[in-house]
Length: 60
Image 1 (tube, rainbow, N blue to C red):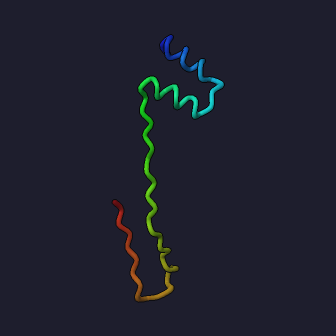
Image 2 (cartoon, one colour; image 1 turned 135 degrees about the horizontal axis):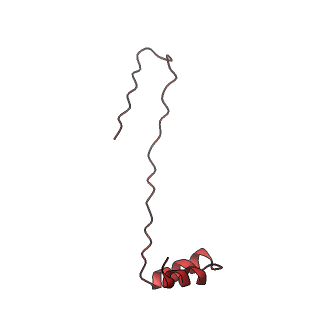
Image 3 (tube, rainbow, N blue to C red; image 1 turned 180 degrees about the vertical axis):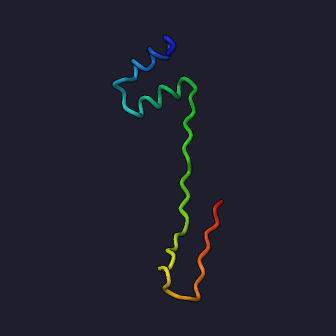
């Protein structure tokens, strides 16, 4: 670890997560948040429940 980076790490040791975000933001760091997309969920029928039902799974 470089000396400047070590100093920054020591300075934020007792800081809250929000305070660390402010410090890193002022240094030019960018926080990326992943969007969570809710997908509809339909449970598969029990095995052998109905002979006419065919289940398929497509992996993408």
